[in-house]
Image (tube, rainbow, N blue to C red; front, side, top):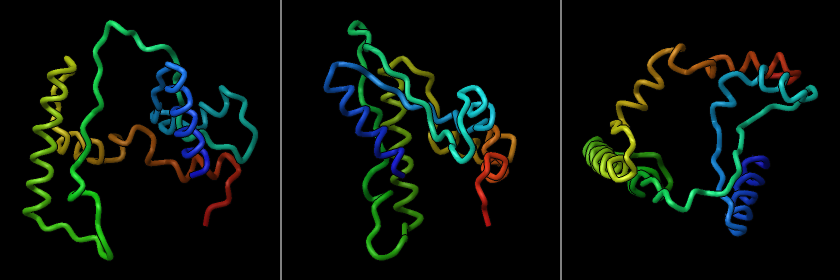
Length: 142
């Protein structure tokens, strides 16, 4: 959590200087190779990468839409009715499709993308073995 908060603050500081940054979550697909490449000592685990640079001012960008608050914010219990879930996810799929069109991105349905990512071990691209990777890197897990 500390690393994530530090990175978030670093990105805010970078943006205040006119720089842009992009997180690279795929680092966790093969953390042992990344650790070897970076010569990380034991008990150090790469959570994500961060690319930093100056944005191209000729390319119009926008903030990717997020799921609605009703789909992600819960009080006291985690309860989302099936109809609320369906409505929230369908609405998000439409907003995301509109965003993707405006950004000249491939149009992908979010719910289908998430389901594909979680379909089986192969679709996790190595993340299914994170516990083994942590053990190999010196972390004692129960």
